[in-house]
Image 1: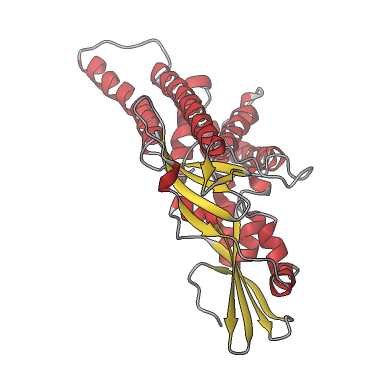
Image 2: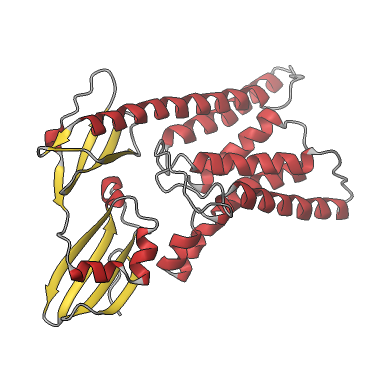
Length: 334
């Protein structure tokens, strides 16, 4: 999810479960809860590095815990230099919890995270939530800001609360967040079942996925793979929903050929196919050979245009690769 959501979630976690930790620990929690997104900067090194590192080591249980511990140690050393001694387990436990909350929330996204790195490179991709969810932001912001408004009012009339500042509001916000994700998970299960149970252009579904909509938890964007095609279609859920598989956009798979086989054996294609959820190849005849483009239809379903990687391969007339690279969507050839 976006850094603002993670920052607010870390702040709510501090107020709700660790209300009495000092300011240096709060700073450690905010850093521990947001710094895993540094792997997004891997895109500056190119599409290949982005596929390898985004959602990778820093979003694993091991990596995020090590990162949070490193931040905690640095903050503890800084606090000591300022005359503040951090004792007990919370100076490191609270930031680790904030970091684990981060990777837990990101595991709900279609992009997924490598939770069990370095023991496994498999991604956990639950597809329950979009990368930016305004309802999640609203829950967190309300849980933090509304108690502040009440505090201002009570202080104005001279009353003082003995409870930790904002704890009740933060706990309510975290509970609503948990319940909301539970509802999203249930709706996602419904959408996925609708997709897999129907037929498309006379063919049964081999596999399917339902991706979240950024505006409504009741709308999902489905992809279904059948024997000869991929099918993209909206999947409404809820009591009044009317799912119609006839609304699907049918994208036919390319026929197997020596050219396509040769393209898929290149290192660029192998790296791409190792991460793509619904790869779709397009083979075109060119004046001097062939061109093959391999993209992930997941991004078409999500209508995502930024940070989208595709594999582009050129082959000679005899089917030998002459160019094979991972590139950003829309990137001009060099």
